[in-house]
Image (cartoon, rainbow over all chains, first blue to last red):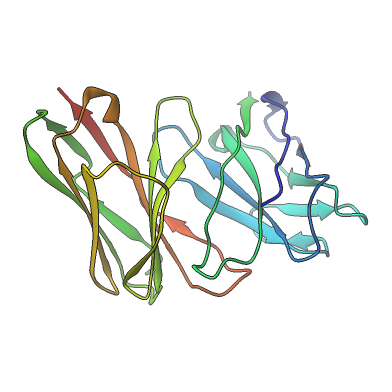
Length: 112
Length: 113
């Protein structure tokens, strides 16, 4: 699976959009980009994933560049409950399902 | 029901004890996983089960013994652990098809004394 690079930490203001970047320059054509987050002392929570097109759901939007070498997770209106570690994961098709390799993630602190 | 339930939530065990962690899901997922997470580190994959058969063992020591008795249950049997095995143990499940998401339980926080 391709490796990802994320900033170790970032702050954002409550009510503003949070834009979380992820670099995955070695991604191959059949690899998906997944985002999970982990709130302190809880299990990781799925946010969104995509292959080529931009995606949006009730939690967030995922913008993938045309060359697929980077992506941005957008939390449209950050709340204090969005404080968490956010993991960008690139995952290839695995015969055994969803083997996820977590990197260091970005520790996001939402401030009032 | 989109929950993965892990029991117990907390466990303290001695180095000579035998204990088991349990994980249950009723989403019809046929892939189940154990992850280990040390403090301030990302989760690390330990085992993957696919159709109740062990398909991936990430070189985990034999003092950790997984078991998948049926499609809804996953156990992790612990024996002769070391203090450095203290961690948060996370269970997850998913469909096997590509492009689907994994659901995680809240974990069992294990302390080995």
